[in-house]
Amino acid sequence: MTASALPLPGKERITQSRILVVGDVMLDRYWHGDVARISPEAPVPVVQVKREELRLGGAANVALNIRTLGAQVTLLSAVGVDEAAHTLKKLLAQHRIDAELDEHQAMDTTVKLRVIGRSQQMLRIDFEKTPDIEVLAGLLKRFPALLDQHDVVLFSDYGKGGLTHIASMIGMARQAQKPVLIDPKGSDWTRYAGATVITPNRAELSEVVGSWSDETQFEHKAQALRQQLGLHALLVTRSEEGMTLFEEDRATTVPALAREVADVTGAGDTVIATLALMMACGIEPQQAMALANRAGSLVVAKFGTACLTYEELLG
Image (tube, rainbow, N blue to C red; front, side, top):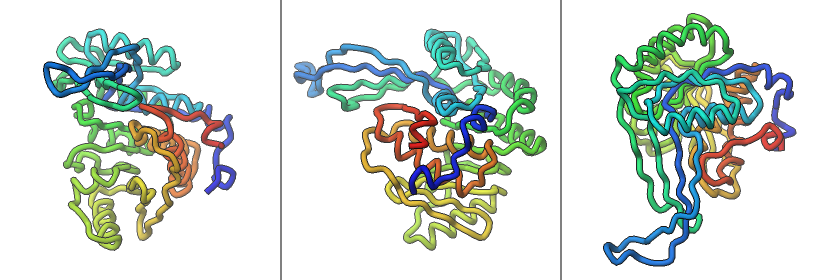
């Protein structure tokens, strides 16, 4: 489907939309270099680092996707009192993203270090520590006031422990009649009950409902999960098979559009960010899915965690 055939809202409507992103933030660090030899100490390549690149990751990348498309966004998360948190705050300010960050000595800010040689990712090193429940209580206290100021709530769950109180937050959002979108993680999704839309990929869904042998079984398992959790919709991203949106009594599939894939890192962030923004503009989930599908197909042609502008999405 071409961009002109999609119900893309006007730029003024986009700029008026306000989305609250809550979840696990992280710093994406890239070391780029050359590979010319194998180490004499072990059979591994030696990367001579030439430059370092720092990017917003996790929920911060979701917020950046929304901001790059032109909407207003607030990020609510928790970080440590460390160099990574300081860098994250600088990057957020550079991109004009409003951030409510709870800082705690008792936790470490998550960092993902990727070593890149000749444009290929050779190694990823994660620095992380799951925060205590007490540390995250501050997010729950800040949430109600921020909820009142936004049209849609988006929870970005990276399984780092930052969404310990998500069930309570979903309850508040439902009471305020605000749509709730969730990018899920893990195998226990009962804490997501009552959300408007959840957007798992195939692997994430199969971890919860088990594998399927054909399309009929896939649809049955997905609809059963949607009903069990009391969701308005379940959107499954299926890589080369496109996306399928499950609503009450119907399933709608759009085909994959990507022609060239450079890097799938962060593609799910772009999909849910676009979906949330379109729903904030009043677009129905089916049409919002088509736009999110287009966004995902465009962003995988870029390297690393990347974003799209309104003009790129318009095509």
